[in-house]
Image (cartoon, rainbow, N blue to C red; front, side, top):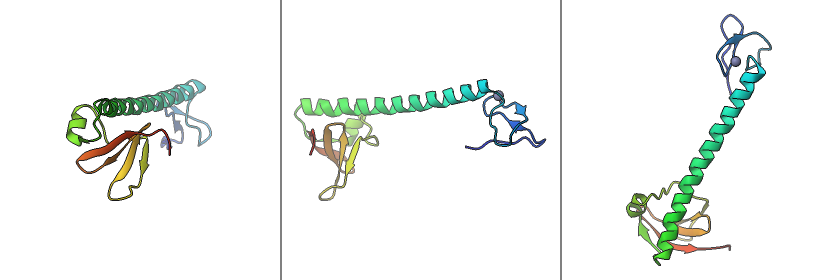
Length: 125
Ligand SMILES: [Zn+2]
């Protein structure tokens, strides 16, 4: 975290940008600004978490639909067209052979550059 110190020697409030005087490490002109800034940061972090949960939920739906169709593999472009985002996983393990193993909650699969395979539900080891 960094803050700008106004050239005149005052501090610049992180929230409203107003110049104020006080301890050099003071970041906010008032408690109100401090609370507003922290509430926004907390809200932004919550929003970011919800976006990731939404991506994982979509991935889970796509994988779950594969299993319901009794399919154990699929090409990545087909999955991505359905809304699957391979960059988001809940688990990763170094593969036995050439491919690493990935998880979306209880659904595990292997992934190559172009496809996923051996899609299966796995509760635990
Ligand atoms: Zn302020």
